[in-house]
Length: 281
Image (cartoon, rainbow, N blue to C red; front, side, top):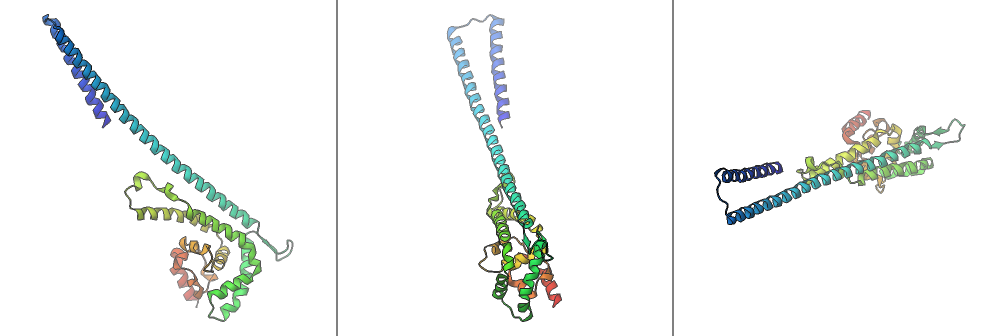
């Protein structure tokens, strides 16, 4: 638009210049007499014309500066989004590294003894301890969620995982509470309705929690399952929201306890897990 205005303006200046130059040549060629009033009128007309041109140029300059300012604002907005994403990812991956350190520092039993376990091997040992506590409930059904929660609480050895689960909860909570507006593209998403934008943000959050889920071993998953059975557990809704039990193995579960969580906790594996448990009966 601005280019067209400039082109038309330049053409107008050229035309006026040629007209003035042409009339000047005519006066000189035919030795026509100049009258003062005509000269004054011509000068006034030219002054008005060039004043108008100057005003138009000022207006065009303002438009150009406004356009440049808009571009700078867009670049600034884009930079802010990029910085927000970098800050989020730095914090998120630092938290994952801290989670790894927590696992590395886990230990059970006396060092040097056969029963001593450290790091990731602790989860298998704790699962065996929990299984022994659950045997009476599995042998003499029906059993309730409250009984399972009580059996879990009775295993004092599992208390060494309190820090581990608290920190995992903080990771998922951090993702859940982060404003993911930095993942929206102003041009691409400006015409999308609110529900579509929310869906895109949820997808982005799911992608990050999936990274955490992918780090969990089979024994970590099954202990997470039992740890968060209590309805009052703050972690439980997030487990169901982000399908954190999607990779849990059916061999660690019983058919009746699958329903202790909402189907979404198992993601797209719910039907497969359910079928495998039914086939075991």
